[in-house]
Image 1 (tube, rainbow, N blue to C red):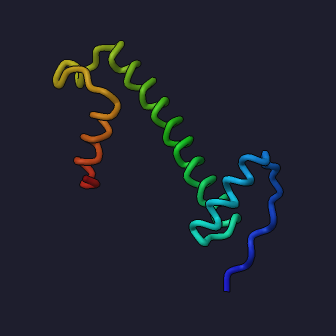
Image 2 (cartoon, rainbow, N blue to C red):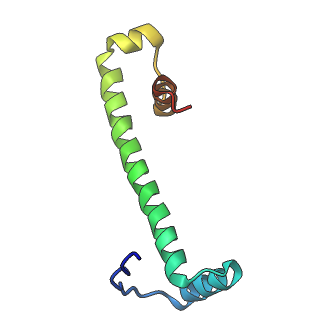
Length: 92
């Protein structure tokens, strides 16, 4: 049986607490479950956004240099480059 996670204390506004209680009641999930899932999703999105910013800076640097890739395929957005990368890896 997995060990229980250590408790973490957070302060919520009354409005947020009511939203959390409503969501817990409607989904029949515990508040702890909803907080953990919501926080996990938000943190992953935050990390992806930061990585996207980093990728955009790298792309901007590459475009500024007018590298071979730019001359061969033209300017591409970060999204287009990520899509090509996923296709190359076989992820999509």
